[in-house]
Length: 485
Image 1 (cartoon, helix red, strand yellow):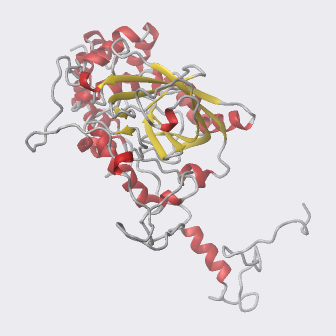
Image 2 (cartoon, rainbow, N blue to C red; image 1 turned 135 degrees about the vertical axis):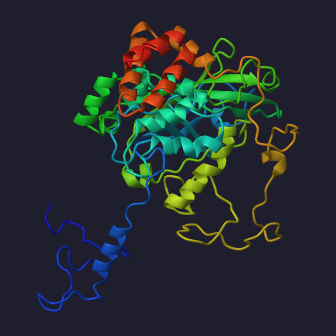
Image 3 (tube, rainbow, N blue to C red; image 1 turned 30 degrees about the vertical axis):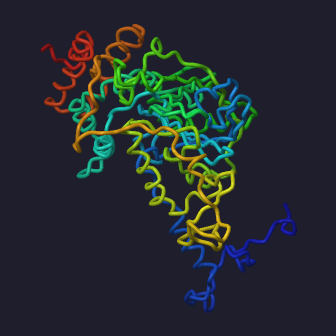
């Protein structure tokens, strides 16, 4: 490209820049002048070009695509995106959970699987992981859990002893930790893993009937994962392996796709179900509620600007469209506040007006003014009003599921169901789902991790933790750690 065809560099106000190389000075050796506005603007912008990284899910990748519903599920939900034949634009962000922005993609960690559906009735954000479960069931413990997985306050170093200290004192973590230390804890690519809404949600149909549901996005590419050794080798060879794989796949015209399967539970069955259906550390066995295929999620386009789209993407579980509502899942209820509050801190109070987060449906809001507001409604700026401003329609869009709630105020766990036990489902996973090779790798992965700095006291609790999952598993872990007790 010749100089004549190149566009002129400008300031952020669009004014042609005087120079790309030289500051304005008094003589060639003189001081720089305060009036060099272009230099000051560049320095000020540079000092602010990094927003705080996410406290969790810091490093990720994303892509655009669509979701198409191919089954009639109107008898379960009135949400328009889940009507047969409906095609909805989406943006999906993958991520690791505990690592920082510069961490390797292939470390042992859950993977975030967050989807923004740009529906006709506003944005629907489904924020999940590549696992159908989580480490805890109450948001009171979330901050402590994350602190145990991050770096020590005194040394700034990672510490496996902190992790196992928390896990062994939190028996509800056993199901997720079992999953994490299988080879599925190190997926081969983002394309070769499932995604889950994880939480229990409520679907409402046009008659006002309610159903509890769980989302399962099953990879069409097939499940593939690294062994522990392969994952560590790739972390050294290419720390951005997952990000690179997704981008290069789409850049050459390929796609990544998942089939959406739903588990549906009639509301009246929840109270008497054998497990608490709102406990995020549990799954609903497929024999009880068989997954039903309803649609397909396809990624086919890369972001044009990583920061503007992937880093500024803001997902919040509170964004639910008509026909979708929360359930009594305590972790979900905690996240309804936590996520939007994190975005307000990280990228600004008006983050929903950024292009990647802006809904494709009309926005008629009385919110106005403040920092970085790109769209500011005129008068009237209050409700109710007689000036023609927008008005809510509770009859049409109000909460569809109203259930009576009573009880004494208190900090209590979930009500117990007949088969509630923190070790039943990880025991089932170990004994009846994992292959012999999977079980061997689970043991070696646990032992290798515990040997890296876990104290003797916590190590003994680790052995007991796995014995409660399965006695043979506990014995094998003990043997690997050189403990014959």
